[in-house]
View (cartoon, rainbow, N blue to C red):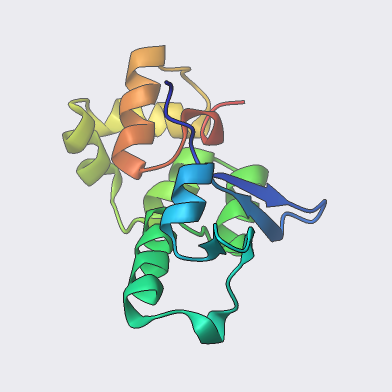
Length: 134
């Protein structure tokens, strides 16, 4: 059976409004009572169930600040996410095994970069590939 990823649903403005999780994760979270076939109210959760729910939330997608997303949409996504991660061009270039000048050309759009290199950049920035390419 294929592992199903968590999904985040956003409204038209990009605000996160819902999360979709695999059924097993939902049941394991302690938020669901199989005997009653209903959700468990927060007040009824044990400390163990609260810890389990917190662990699931930690594994969910990371929240990216709106100003970072806006900078990525209006300018260079690689630069926006690199700065958000607190990395210089030299840091990111070293992490992916390329020269800072080449990374600069990719950030400014003067060069495209290979698919493999873009995947390495996305991995180093801990974002999905589609967040840094058009």
